[in-house]
Image (cartoon, rainbow, N blue to C red; front, side):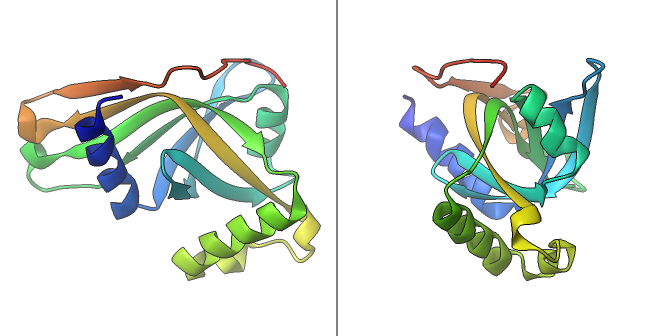
Length: 157
């Protein structure tokens, strides 16, 4: 693995907590929603209402894509990520609680969106298969691809 590229990717992940998440609807069309996230190494975590469309989409097809960036007035300083990965619901209650607390500590404003019953909150992990770092400071349209080996691309679960 290219450690310098990984360090740049981790820097983007730590600077941001909002991503556009694309899931696949039952009719085959993509659906993009904006969600808050936290990360541990290259794995991203987010929470959603268990009855939400995105949770249902992931249950049917766990392939997802995400984009993370911030707006900049200087287009040539744009830096962000585009990633493909597999989303998995965290079913271990203690791990789900640990991750939801981590989310709410990092993003206290998101607590207002939590369902009344904690069992209605679904916590997901996104294990990346490929991550593209977009870095216009290195040149217009410049991106660097990090493909992660030994990631099983199951498609459905």
